[in-house]
Amino acid sequence: MSFLYLQCQTNLLLAVSITLVHFLSLSMTIVRIRHRWRTGRIWWDDYIVVIPWAFDFISTILLWTEYKNTDISLYTPDPEGFVYSNWFYAFTYFTIIWYVCIIFGVEPLLRDVFDLALTRFSRIGLTLSVAGIFLPGHRYRICAFIFVVVLFLLYFVSVLIGTFSCPGSPWWNLDYTHCNSTTIIVGVIIDFASDAVLVAAPLFIFWKVKFARQSDRILILALFASSIITMLAAGLFCVVWYAAALIGPDSKLLFIMTGHLQVEFPREMHM
Image (tube, rainbow, N blue to C red; front, side, top):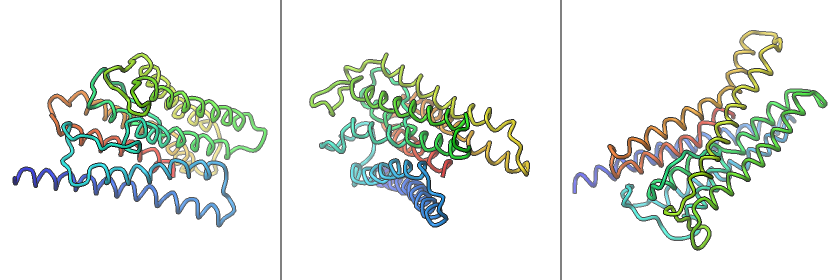
């Protein structure tokens, strides 16, 4: 009994910690939009950021409603209903950040892989931020807008992959015993490629730009190269997954926590 009590307390502590991270991200978004609105500098990237903000708020609520008064482990049954379905979790996290890590035929863990979406709309917002730096008609501004369209199409492809790679009945009740690993591999390749572009392109664009102060150059390059943090977070999740056999049933808790952290990293880095 004391062990179960200690386990529940640990789950509660981790849930509270993750909720605080969510709260920080949500609050920073509100402060950012309010500041941009009051100074008359609000732009498309500020409107776009509202979309992941809303889904981030939903994911925070689901974290508490799904696992309330339960021990989080691989043996914990998932609640019934569309909002707790694997597809809705995939859609939520794809919309927040869009990242999928690959798993081959492991039913209890695959939903948590979908949780690792590195938000597509956060990427779109970051790209719009790059476009907003340049004057209308500048080639880099045009390239940034084109990349925004490409990212949105890739977001749509990611949602389709999450929907049809593990078909079930009804359609939102994904069946992990019939997953098509090829489509998931394609999603991972697309994801890493987009992150690589988001790291390399700003470095290439701003490398030869002259700034009034060297500190400004370092700050801007560090900001737009922060997408590499999301790639490192993805690698961390993969390490946790491969160590699942050693961790045991409690590995599900780690999947959930690393998934939520990976959602928040890019949002907080780009606020």
